[in-house]
Length: 157
Image 1 (tube, rainbow, N blue to C red):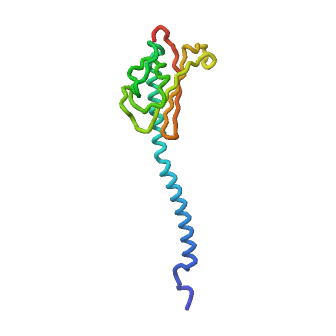
Image 2 (tube, rainbow, N blue to C red; image 1 turned 135 degrees about the vertical axis):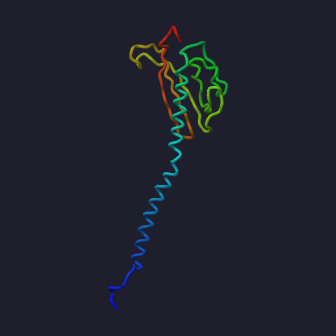
Image 3 (cartoon, rainbow, N blue to C red; image 1 turned 135 degrees about the horizontal axis):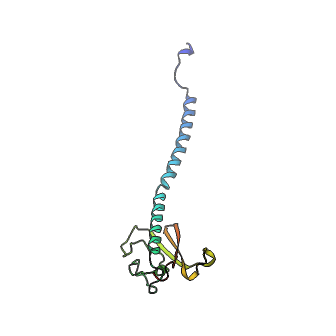
């Protein structure tokens, strides 16, 4: 019988092909598994950034000084009427200014500190400058943003 007319694969060729294909498939599945584990992370990061930016904007829009500190009632901030009212707002759940709950699992902390003089150009006194830092946490992840608020219109508030 002639060897010219034989077709197909030998058993050794089939085993080698199966080993190569299974190794490639294992690598692809490992990458897909890792991607699936971290696929929710970008969404949580974007939500933390949006919450932090919104809170920072809310704080910086308040007058520099009004009538003194107002304590928070839970996460209700509707009575806050100046920047320094937010200084003790720590580890509160996310909610809108009236206290209506927002996305679950996130907490917000706001730090308001006097900072000026050498930190800013123009010699603005520390008493006329606040550094506002907002930190949003979700589990072990956190996102922090900061902004400056100066008493730029001393007589106008």
